[in-house]
Image: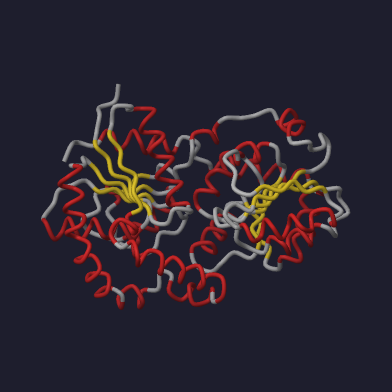
Length: 375
């Protein structure tokens, strides 16, 4: 039995890969050490509940309407330097709240899946001369400078070559563990594809394409669906709109007008089954979603990725042969047809995906956390 610990997991934004990552780590911790006490909290909401809503709204507006601005802000050394004073002020404001939290809960370790809480705790440690172990878990394939703090004890990265990029940014190699991006253990379960197809009322012999837009249901999904209508293949589609209720209603109204068979879902808890039943996935390249897809060995098509982390993740995945990028959503059907025309190419993509996959990432991260000496 693994030793029990008191662990705080921190993320920002309820519907996000960062939150999915903490949930995955929490599940793994409970499997290995059921007696451990775990606090899984939205750090931004805990310290700045009003600011969280405002900043989340601004972020969503920026990436939807002015993505080039986000690209300019993302990991820009000039911007990183300029926001240093603002960041210091915010962290000083938050430190007393963190002090109260840590004194009350008495954690043995704090684990952050997003750079903002990681920086907040890192500066708290500096201010109060704390030895509390702090772990940063990166959920994207290109590390940005907002993660870098001297008082972070360990960084967990998606892969060895991502670790090298972190080393180039000045982080000591001894602090880095390439254990992968954590995702829910159920994605390691495999289901019989044909049994699932019968359950979902899908054909046993037609290509099935899964279309997703992350937890927020973003991306040019309507244009993608319209593009696939032009395909000469009798494709069947599964569409997951997640939290995007407006998109769900819009597609629901038009569903009978499409030539292709479409099965439409809103928010679901069985994405692992939907991946198992599919031949190709069209998705946003969020880190956690990507880790799930790789574990399933599913060929990935990424349509018009946003500047910033999405573009960096896309570049990483396409370079490794696990994904194909489509710049114009209207051309999606051409890429899908090309893949269906070339079974060998599809097979190679599956092999590349499985090669990159780290299926036991959440469990390995949990074991690492539990193996740390007490603070």
